[in-house]
Length: 180
Image 1 (cartoon, rainbow, N blue to C red):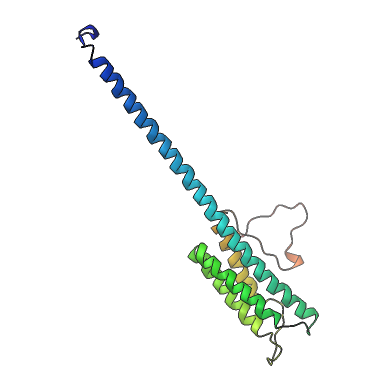
Image 2: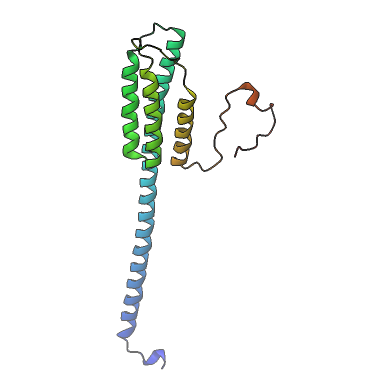
């Protein structure tokens, strides 16, 4: 069969069919690209929302830690302010529960609960008042929160090295091996 024997009405129909297929293929590819861009934008928005929640929580806990530091310098410093500061921590923790993973929400819960328990022991009417400095348990829970938050935000590298003494510091210029 030769092209000369094809009916003159068939060639335009073949052209229309090829054009329609090309249009459908182009629309399909454009929709896939749009869907991918939309998914990427949603993911970026969710990450920003999680980062804001984490930052707010850290800011609130930092204010409590700072206030407790003031109590160690000025024992007469108003411990009643600590109640308001802890309220801000609990609120920030609830925001984390709304927008972050269960693992991060649990780490925030553990740290908040311990920070609250220890802060209540600083109340001036309590007997056997404790030191306003963060306890080892509080520092441990804060470190666990930080590592979980780093994972939440997509950091997959080695954990932070939390040195507590000058003796633990490496010599200047020495390379630091990751802790296991």
